[in-house]
Length: 201
Image 1: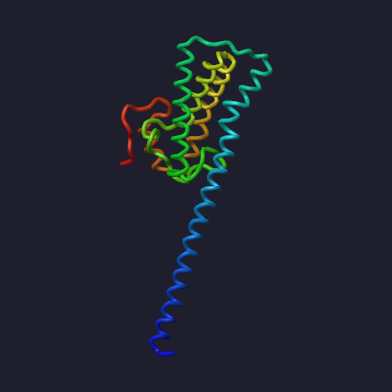
Image 2: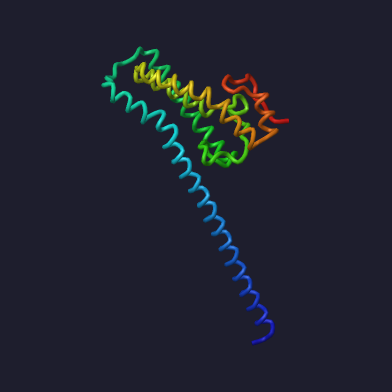
């Protein structure tokens, strides 16, 4: 075999090896991304099951069952209002969950909080849009079920969060994000949205 043939053969051999290594690297990268995405999805499922599912489904259902609740249709206007609030609440919840997962790199759960401070989207207008979405869905639930009991549960949940956020949640955020959160807190309201979006200077 001539020297030229040996050189071409070695070149093809090295080229094939490089392609195999490159393909393996791509596969490993894809597998890593799949693992991260799967882990994040499972974390969100756990978060939803433990937190909002209990507040919006398990506790109200148990309370209604224990009080022999019988559904009666509400006024048409209130049914329409409840439906609008439900759609808005679900949409806002999905948006804030997406922001937490993609921008904050975490979930709404205390055991897996965001690694980065989220200050865009609805968070540029109000500091707690995710819990506001739950409030909206609770009111919608009370209107659609025509239940003062569910409305009362919303009142208790609202009161609990009015105390929890300033005394616990915000203290933790101040420790984790420091100056950025202090600046954000000074400029963006806790509950009532500001008229224009705010951005960190």
